[in-house]
Image (tube, rainbow, N blue to C red):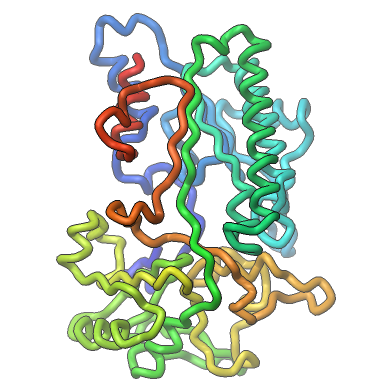
Length: 381
């Protein structure tokens, strides 16, 4: 997010309240209050979803490392009820955050989360449980969506899900359980990046300050700058510079679409936190956050695993070089990315929906809206 009042950026924010609408667990609790026929409590659990801190779910576990003043980090997970993660840790061992994201991301994180799901099924007996299996995301970025590594990781995900299903069988609840598998987003194979902030700087729209011989974005005096996330960028533009910024972006090779206010409304992303302009890359490109021409002038955090100070997601953190103790700047190392809107006519960029029950959601169409899936979950009770 970019805070226009404080001229500051933040990434990986976790509070549930940042999602400004009711979630499934909120709607279920409201339904309980309003419906006299619902005579029993619906218990919900959410494991490792991003924006779930302080959410209105009965059981929550999500990574929340504590960064100490000496540079060290305490691996910890926020949980509800209080102490739930600590109980889980005594039974399963500590969750290793390093395997969840960054250069050591691996199926080990998903395996632990799968065990956490089994533990929750037995200990808490939720009526509705959401579980995030993360590891395929990172192998797709490293190797591309058609790689053998991604196929192997899909098999591992299948085994993890199979273990969860088997747990419901051991608990005697398999026959009454509906399983839904949803993919998070569709990947595209990519060859290189587009450094939007470098292009904005060359056009005289982005300013920098030199501090300690390193260049930093001057958010105060920049006319425009881009916060990037894979194949999408929110471009924050000051009054009077929207037209020029739009022309600059539209002329860039590798930029597929440039959305101003009306086009943002069409896609329902004209939010107050959105950039004045949103840029979408072509299928084979992604957006880097870089703004420097000389790598020697890049700020110190650019070469480190630092998910909070960079004004954009940096997939090159997956390629941390231990010998150099830094990450590379070779953006062509990234082989997979995501974020482009789906194309319903071409059937491209669609997420996957799989269920063990016939719900009627796909009766009249091969595609289904996410909101319809949410309503289906709510209407189960």
